[in-house]
Image (tube, rainbow, N blue to C red; front, side, top):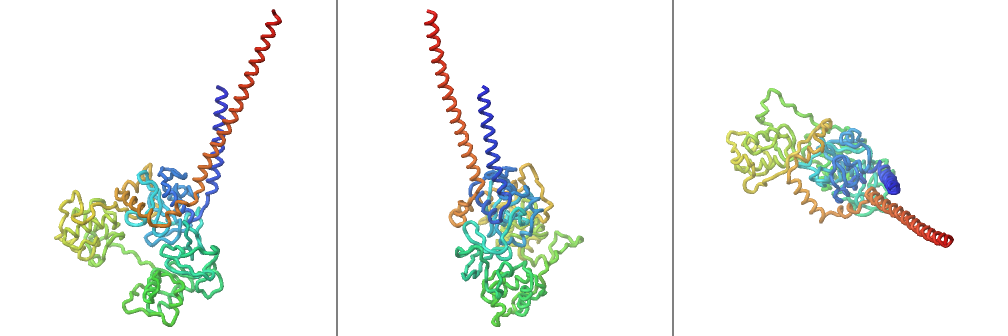
Length: 520
């Protein structure tokens, strides 16, 4: 019995020590990472079919924040991750072209992959999901993780493809001449060929002899400086821009530059790169009289505050002139939803967010009221909706669409504007998954099937390097070897002990015979 206890103690000690060595080294090694590495890590989690486990942060079993933590460490939960971020921004204003950004909404975080796609560990019923951003899959903020580093200028390899970063973002729909070679970048930012030297910087068409790491070769929304002033002044001279020449490349400057690119027959991306040669040339096209240059500056418009004395249930004349469509979010959308609910077309709480469900409800209303079923609240639809002759839903309990209308739509996810609303609603952090409909599951299945046949990203993602998964396999291998060695030692010991016992028995037998002979 004592022998069995000793063997058990030795085995447990070996297992404990090997676990500490393998997993301890894995997590200390991954305490920091890169944005592209995080994006590949998240993609691998999706393609490997990782499970959702509340509180999990180890490869194969993670929750939403654990997916991020399992790669780069840092803060464990979504709210601290956002609060310690090195840079943040509103998703509604656009997500930068950066691999591996964090995404946040109340109670949930995810990883931005690029090309408007994200990966998140969503819940028990979904596991790890990979899908596009928009509709019911809305996010509030993007942020750069403090535990990750992000490329500013130069080449970045991601999922087997090469991307080129300028001013902190990878470039798309354009070309660059780098070390004498011209590279073309598609709408996803992928380079047309593998760079010969990934440490090279873009020379573009800049007149400066310095590298792009010290002097940018393109300017876009968010850029500042003297070159932006030159761009604004030239756009102003050509009649595209009417704002202040303040050196800040904002929304109005981007809009004006897009108008110029369109008029000049250039790629319309709003990025002032090598096409500035056309802008500064004598042949640069001037703005036509129909070009919209009414926006005076790049400063954001002040939000309008409704008059408390005004009856908010009644649309104003200005409201009637506006169109409301999928993706909008404001108080007028709330009024529309409440009115649709009163007429029996909308059977969930008003959120103020115009999503797929609202769009379907509008189509149903339009069909019943002999209007064109566009799903958009235009002036004609608005007038009928708030008029006395609006036809109510003939089947309000089912609230289903007649004829060609779709009978189900994802539940809408309203967008929050304050990070302080991060609240874990229950023990499993399921305030997102509890509201998702069966259509979300079907959408994921269709997306998976389509992606498996289309994108080269899939093949490279499957072969992404995942060091910690390999470490887990190494641990099992190491334990098997150690246990085998221990078993072999005890086998030899038992064999030796058995031989010694037989020797002693034979000796005792000989002594007995000699003793008997002496007595006789």
